[in-house]
Amino acid sequence: MSSDIDSLEAERKRLYQEISKTGDFRRGSIIVNYRRCGKPNCACAQPGHPGHGPQYRLTTKVAGQTHVKNLRPGRELEIVENEVANHQRFRELIRSVVEVSEQICDIRETLSCDSSHVESEADAETTAQKGASKTASKRKSSRNSTIS
Ligand SMILES: [Zn+2]
Figure: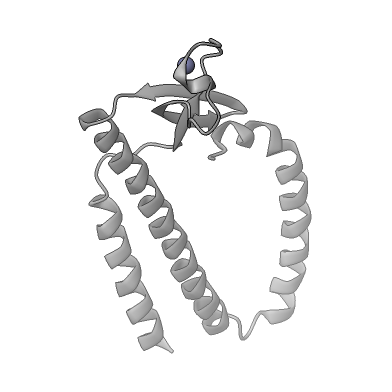
């Protein structure tokens, strides 16, 4: 049992080290856009013309607001592409840390849950009720940190 915890803790430590090496990252996604200017004589009005572009845009949704930033093809686009990819990586690592940490919690619970089993079950019930009302009142403020 404890060797399980040891290897899981080692894995968690390794993930933290990887997270610290993520580098610069930012939220959002890059969208490629082709656009028709609307002038009837322009080439983009011809059937089969893809439209003007490509135009690259970083769109980020924070707290229900969408932010759009135009990106110049070339170096600026490359940098932002890398930052966005790093954010995906960061999120995957965070998810892995949470999963590993939950496994550690489960094992520790099993290890410590022997003598005071009945008492801890009653505690769990009141904690769950408190937790539920806390979540409901906290929902509005937590939306600010929503990531998309
Ligand atoms: Zn046009």
